[in-house]
Amino acid sequence: MQQTNNIQSIKEITAILLEEQMKTLMLTSSDENYVYKTIEYPTAPEEKSEPSRAVICTIGTFLGFILSMIIAFIVNLRQTLLLRK
Image 1 (tube, rainbow, N blue to C red):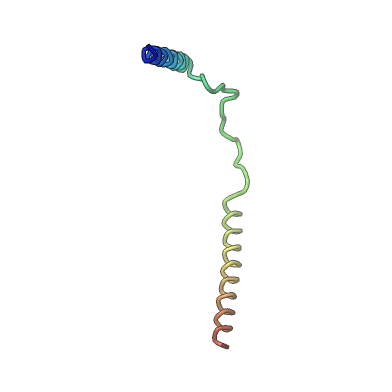
Image 2 (image 1 turned 90 degrees about the vertical axis):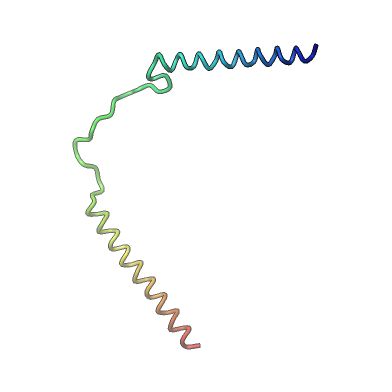
């Protein structure tokens, strides 16, 4: 008796889940914007935005040069300290 109740409740739960999924599928197939609502369509900008590529390259080159000089100084200092010992 209890086993038939369990089987019946499992069938009912499965039917409910299938019904919910079918409702969701029906809503998504009927409306493209089921989840999202488009507020405003995108447009291309009229002018280029900042920062410019030249500024980024110049700053990157300058920072790379400074970083490489610091690394070279530290390596040279370490080698001279190790040779003195």
